[in-house]
Image 1 (spheres, rainbow, N blue to C red):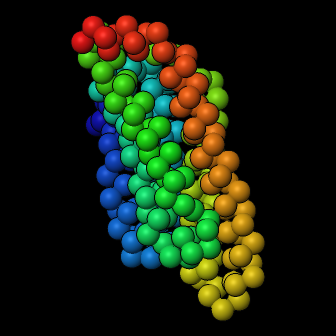
Image 2: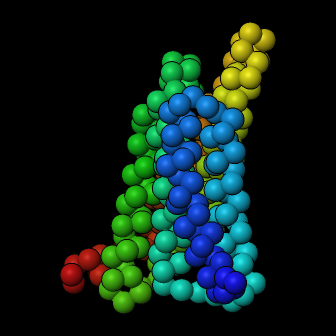
Length: 201
């Protein structure tokens, strides 16, 4: 019998386990299975937070691993999209978009690790950061669904797929600039605290 306090961390670990499986099916061009894997991983993201609140469980392990798992999941998806010819050739996604998302998420994750090592210092997080995460997840699921459509209905999908990719581009560009904005806001809101802590390393 699994102790209830372990459930959030188990779900977080499951999300991490799903990431390489998701990447494998993406690179194998099996978009339907990739969509299922990503959707399952996204559900665990919601579920671990739900059970953590329900059982009032907070651990340093979960506090560190949960946001890291989220970043790895999102970044693995956007990186995989760069390997999909139809997305790159149609201009749906560009390396600079992925670069902005990657730099923002990795740099802030590293800073959080440094702050925790300095005494579990809490940094201010923008309220719009949750909207950024939601936007990233919706964008990825939409693109995966569009690719799944093209995979199943190959002959009939050309005009419809073009429309889906146009929407995908709009979602990606919105998500990119929303991610950039939350990153700038994060550094601005925590600037003094970061300078003080980092200058006393």
